[in-house]
Image 1 (cartoon, rainbow, N blue to C red):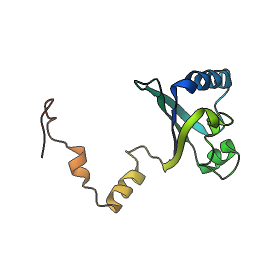
Image 2: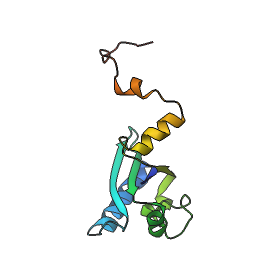
Image 3: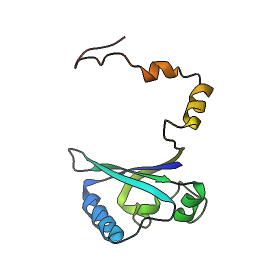
Image 4: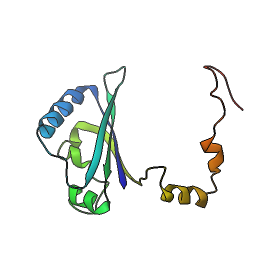
Length: 133
């Protein structure tokens, strides 16, 4: 599984234009072939500007390449294609994903010497405002 993360920022002046264009673009479309899921989040700042994150999960890299339209995965925001001028900036990242219960995740944890026992049996949660050393 591949996790694709698009982070961006849009000024207060352009936010309404960007979201209107995206709403129109996304109305009635089917998910791309190979996409497992998608989540979009917005954070509105005091000055009216907004940060956003668009996280998609994919079956494999080939599905991502087909959706993006080639192997250049980071120079275009793809979902925002032709709307990049409305954004102040954006960043695209790709990660190997896993259901953390899979053997792959356990092998990866062992490879970097993570003590799985410490993760699986956490101590009591601290109360609000407390500090654990």
